[in-house]
Amino acid sequence: MFDRNLLRENLTKCVARVIFTKTDGSIREMNCTLMEDFVPKQSGPTVRHIPRAENDEVLAVWDLDNSGWRSFRLDSINTIEYIGVNRV
Image (cartoon, rainbow, N blue to C red; front, side):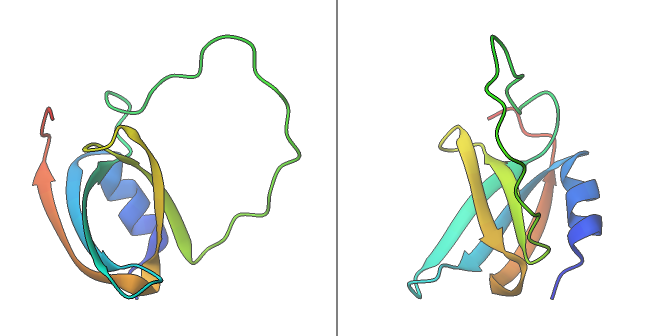
C-alpha cells in the first residue's frame, strides 16, 4: 500500500496520473493534484459542518479532467506516475 502522507506531500508539488481499481471492479485513470494553483479557493460564506473523522485509507484529490474533488482508496492504487506541473 502507498504511504498516504508521502502521496499527499508529492501531490502538493506536482500532478500525478493515478490508475486504480474502483469498488465496482472497473479500472479508473485520473490526472490529479493537490497543488494550490489548481485546487479552487474557498470563497463566499461557509457553512460549518461537524468535522468527520479522517479515513487514513482514502485520499481526496482534485481531479483535473473533471474539475472536481474525487477520492480513492490507497489499497486500490495500481500505479502512480508523477507527470510534473501540467496546466490541464
